[in-house]
Image (cartoon, rainbow, N blue to C red):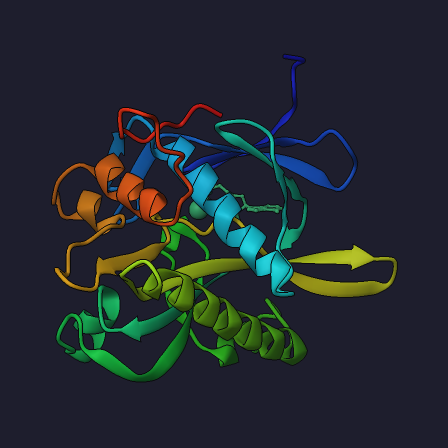
Amino acid sequence: MARRKKIYEGKAKILYEGPEPGTLVQYFKDDATAFNAEKKATIEGKGVLNNRLSEFFMTGLNQIGVPTHFIRRLNMREQLVRACEIIPLEVIVRNYAAGSICKRLGLEEGMQLPRPIVEYCYKDDALGDPLVTEEHIAAFGWASQQDMDDIVSLALRVNDFMSGVMLAVGIRLVDFKIEFGRIYDGDFMRLIVADEISPDSCRLWDIKTGQKLDKDVFRRDLGDLTDAYSEVARRLGVLPKMPHGKPTLIN
Ligand SMILES: Nc1ncnc2c1ncn2[C@@H]1O[C@H](COP(=O)(O)OP(=O)(O)O)[C@@H](O)[C@H]1O
Ligand SMILES: [Mg+2]
């Protein structure tokens, strides 16, 4: 393959210059990190699964008119995406209490929240991605009020879409995190869903058993992470079945 310019290497993905201007190639690594990268491991097959799952969710979002950066999958580990200016926020939507909100507010894990709650964290690894409010976002100019209105309504649409898709296969969408970016069509700026949507960035629990099918399996040493992600992919029909019944990941 021709040498490509590496633009950025993060914890879970690598960005390369894309084949056309305004595009990037997003490569999904097998690396897993948790607790602000204090815990690290390489988990064989994770990148392949997340590439497929992010393709699946972003394609669905594009189809219902929620714009995303996804253009097309290139191979097992790579997808072509639109390059955008990332807004330095992690936008979190919570339907049930889990993770940091339990500690912060003393909530019992698994409690249904009165309504979906949208939170923002400032994307800065050195600071541990601290929780911020719309006041900080406006004061420091990370996003305008119009951007924030768009972000909330898009995030809630993503939540409804993802909740429905998951419910249909017996999985509860507890919470998720997404990132948004700006793209420019001439003078016109719009926001799109960027980065990834995968079990690395969602909490997914089996509705019947409560079994965790997301990155908490790694965070809390609950078993084999690729088994959990494969189960999500299998239920969604993202993994074609081989005659012997085992899922396959060939292209
Ligand atoms: N379409 C895009 N255009 C530009 N940057 C993107 C796009 N999608 C994702 N990114 C950025 O690329 C990086 C993806 O790599 P990742 O391993 O998740 O990094 P990090 O360790 O910073 O979370 C993230 O910093 C994300 O904000
Ligand atoms: Mg990331």
